[in-house]
Image (cartoon, rainbow, N blue to C red):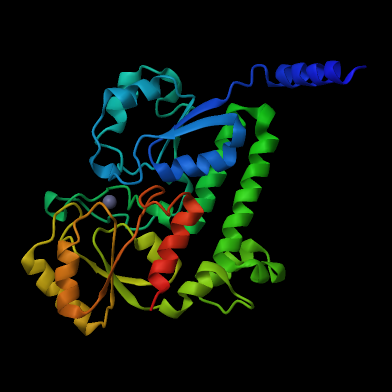
Length: 327
Ligand SMILES: [Zn+2]
């Protein structure tokens, strides 16, 4: 057989194998979910996100462009816990796409796959600010949750496309390995299983040959920090940092002079030397508090694309860890 014919045949075969394998159209509400979905789906999906990394997902509004994208989606993936409540249902309803409505296989709420913090006890009132009744929705900033989110995405993709399940799980394994290595360093992983390391680290136990993010942030364990919004508790919790307060007096309520004065007193008493906030909030309050306390202000992206360096989920965490571990 001539080389040319062989080539044409291989191409035809590849095409036949791919027939019916139109890439899945995945629409994620946030850029972080989109990045995890890309890692797991690989070449078998076209993935986009509604919220860019520089936008605050709490405050988007439903736009015709969002509805158009939901209309052709095979899978819609959300953070849940009412993070997207201002716009998600209007977009899904408007799309009239019955495949991606909540409760169907084409709708995935990732909050169901992670352990939640800040689940309010007792009745909620307006005075508590913009509290999320199901729990704090900023869970993607804990790398262990990123791992769980990727697992949930792989499971759902395998259900939607059982013929590709093997590839999704292989991609998941690759992503998980990369994440574990960033977290603990390659050397620590030679001595123990990743699952064991996550557990030991969570208990604050010594890990031989520890590297990665865990080692970088180890010196900050037990130290306090202040954040703008209550959006860093999962990250702080994973690395043993203490969030002693927020610049916002209540979630969604802008800083007030009275609240900042109280916060400054707390920070001085607890020797807090760090203020952490997202790029989409004004740094005015942080600068004021910094002037009074000497605390360093760190502006870090909390989502993929929130800063040019935050090119993907792992790079996002790289940046946050690098910024916080600076002296
Ligand atoms: Zn929030």
